[in-house]
Image 1 (cartoon, rainbow, N blue to C red):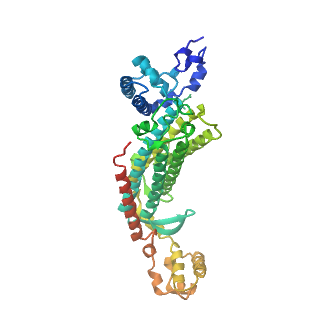
Image 2 (image 1 turned 180 degrees about the vertical axis):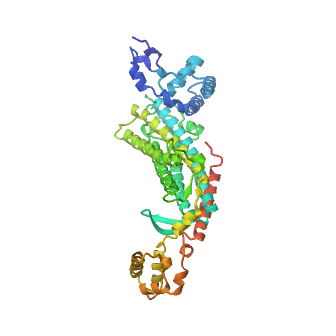
Image 3 (image 1 turned 90 degrees about the vertical axis):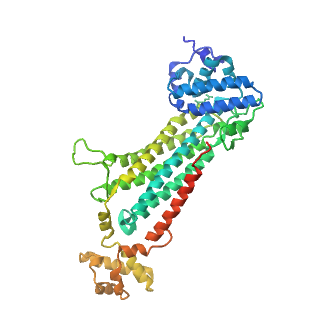
Length: 472
Ligand code: ARG
């Protein structure tokens, strides 16, 4: 029989040691060591609060803080020995502190539980990662707007049902993605706000019996406020769900963009080419240049959605307050953080390397019937109901198809056979007039698109400036 129980920081009421298999199942140190920075910051703030409330002496506080700072350096430099029998990041650091400074170190856990400790760590981590992802989202949005500006002349068909629908500007299309990612930014901003509240001081679940100052700790750690209800403070992981949800929506947006890049890069479309740095070859087919980066971004969306579902399922039906189930919130969370970040960065770096095949896009935009809506609008503006105009143009399409003609082959007489209200100016209509007729708010007309782009740029600059010196 191993005599490990007395080594455990919680081992007082145990007679025998933990089974190896339990140790393996229970330990989270392999992954939660990633929270060392947050764990030590939380402990330092807690120790300072204990001193300021005369629960420990200033001297004891100094010893604890110095010890924690040394441990921090050790971990940062890779010199720290994480031990599986010390379970998790909290106990590894606390035990190392006691090894280092003796019984004073054992005072750190006064008026605290690992339950409010982990809640604090993961909230600090969420806040940090929201800030990082917000920066990556801004980088991607900037790139989209820059390309939209540089390529403001490129015209391509806009699609519905993946069928050519109406001519649009590429910049308009890219700006639609910018709008999507700007909503993602709002979601991460909100997640950051939801996470940035202090649970520390809630103790195990019921609050603590010491005269602590929860606001002191909250201020020290840069939290906006405290989570008042101690049970909620240790049990709440809604902010993690918010994060997963924001991340999933972001990944869905990335996957839509990735999908379009893949389709546009196919020989069937031939709208763009991939730079060597963002493509890979085939081990068997020498001619291949594959868009793996876009495919991986599209594919990684699945694991992020999977992680969201895992977290929702994890919380479902959990009774209050803390349960060990909550330890299972971390790996999926870390995975999502890393996945979203790498995909945002890869997309932002890949976009400027895409070579747009302007001529092919233009050719496709001049599809035989792409001006059908514009022709119907032409007639309806001359006074006939739009439905009748629609019917007349529908018939004209049929006539062209039966005679293997495009709209551009039609003479004025052909038009007039379809409807007497057609005049010679119908022959001047082309995709350029179709675009300039849409200089309406949010339309694909070049002036409207530029206006919207300027506004999006200003919004982005504003966001960038307000995040230039984050408080924490
Ligand atoms: N490793 C644990 C977690 O991630 C820390 C909290 C453990 N608390 C407890 N009472 N066992 O949730």
